[in-house]
Length: 430
Image (cartoon, rainbow, N blue to C red; front, side):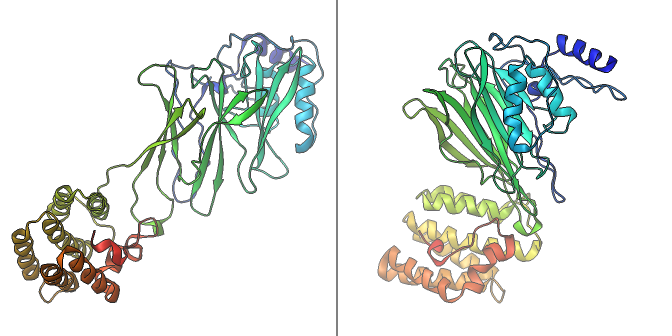
């Protein structure tokens, strides 16, 4: 009885702290620990309390809500222990009997049903001025699967208005944040669902918004293809409308090869009422192969001068690094960069520079394993003089098609891992 009295006293003065902690973590794999998921607001948040000693319960706290209480706190029975499928009704009955969201959070943590950071969040998400309750809990019979529940205030009682079940093999949906993100006067619910393979975890984030009596997903598309992503909400112009920044990191497998972060910016579109990808960029990388990819992209855009400068950097920059075989990889990439600089020169109507580069290339790679790149350049130069640039490109592509082991395979996934693209004959010429 004394433990219950202590717990009741603590609950009477504390709010739900786990929801203030917006850096939940995916359980690490054997190959690579995942980064924290970060969704900060514009104002500082409270820190999670230091855990108590012995058997005392850590009472979570929740950022203060201006919304009114839906069901006044009163004397009530304890939350019954039941099955995963019956807990939604048990939670609803428990709240409607006079239990506070803080007490529900403690019950979930003590029983191992909910995560210790964000098991419950109480906030008005429907715009009626009453606190609604969002709950994340685990299926103890089939962990780590679970569900996310949203109980809305209907008059003077809570009702279950939305359910998100984890996908088969997936983890319990994690409650990340609740805030008005699009300046419409309503609070959106941000959660994520994680699925882990043998080496890597992928996380699918979703934003739920209240619309005409139902909760609708407001993220157009999916973040589920991003390994170990981090999330951040930003409002740099302070207009009350937030962008979502998603940074996908590395696949947790050596076989994936060298990788670089991918940064996606999701912006809110007031016409569709949803967030959609507006920008996607690749982070800088110290690997020489990734600079080759950047130069290729510039060439594809018709930016031949920029492409040539990047390919020159591939040849000359000593600070760039190789993946496994330093000498062989450098020679292959540098020889390919010479060839592409020749192509770029001719596409800029500068044949003399292209011929000078060819002479330098032929001298550097005579009687070497990279001589196939010289032969491809020779085919391009010879036929471009007679048949024009398209004719030269056709000959270069035909050479690559008939000699893939010499000029394509050394650039692709067989060397650099499955996270890096293969090169095809079409790639060797614009």
